[in-house]
Amino acid sequence: MEEPVNASRMTQRYAKKREAILHEAARLFNRSGMKGATLSDVAGAVGLSTNSITYYYKKKEDLVVACLLRSIETVSGIIASAARETGPEQRVRAFIRLFFARLARTAAGDVADGSEMMTFRDVHLLGSPHSEVVFGAYVEMFRHCRRLLAAGPIRPGKRTELNARTHLLLTLTLWTMSWSARYDPEDYELAAGRMADILVAGIGSKTAAWRMTALDAALTAPPGASDSAQDAFLRAATALINEAGYRGASVERISARLNLTKGAFYHHHPSKEELIAACFERKFTVIREIQRIAMAGKGSGWDKLCAVSRALVRHHFSEQGPLLRTSAWSELPEEMRAAKLDETSRLDRRFASLLVDGMQDGSIRPLDQAIAGDLVSGMINAAVLLDRWVPDVNGENAIELFVRPLFEGLLVER
Image (cartoon, rainbow, N blue to C red):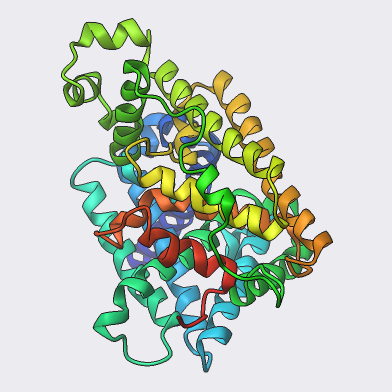
């Protein structure tokens, strides 16, 4: 009987160590990005040598896939629990509440029932066949999440609308992993309730109306847009980085889109890191100018916030777009990251400022402006991936399918 007992102990030790590896790996990938964290970093965090960790995961990509699949499994379990509620509103509220409860356990150090979940910001960095494995599992999770919003059978004519709203709900909920740490773990339940209230009831007061205003026309062609060769180069680079990540956006592919030589690339930017930094600056310029024009214009806080959001999403899908996805910061060198994150945070605070203006003038109902600001910013960033779920999306239907539900309420029928 000694041999089976020893084998069982070996299996238990293996499983325990593997869980520790997944927990620390997810934590490191979240902090430094898939590109920034190494197998050696993970090995050191769990007391193993680099050679020893390959006994569990041969390559870093294998470990990334394992972390992502475990995150999908965890979120899918939360969705399944929320699906037991009676109606869409109850299911949405339960999903957000249970997700925050899971984050609270992680923040409190409960590794047994709250091990770190890896964010999905670096999924596009995976090559084949890893990307197919993860995306296949994500699609299945997405389908289950879509059922949370459906009051009955999903009618073919409603599938596009439901896909857009599901992407909004799922992405904004996962996005909370990037900002929930500013709360004490015992306040996560409060934050969950406030976020759910915004998604269900929307942002506007009873007198607010979704309408185009003079601001929309003023923001159609924002300053910073240009037909120059440099701007065209940055647009092509941004599109490739959004599609294929840092690795996929090779010098050859960027140059080929514009019929340029590799030498022309290095004439514009000495390195790919500096190229990403320039793409960030281009995005910041567009956002800053659109916000500035709106804040200086006439109208209520609601009108201004709606107009800014419509303009940014419209810009993303226009010939002057796209906007660089926010998560590209993880592909920058350490010394560049802090500055880009700080600038992103400063621009996000302007959304909160417009929310406060709206609450003061009565066009926006009383709500948590910090959380609402994060949701507006997250929605604009999530538009980058909307075409994966709504293949025929464009600057106009994205506004109705994706922007409007955040402002009026995720479950409002139109």
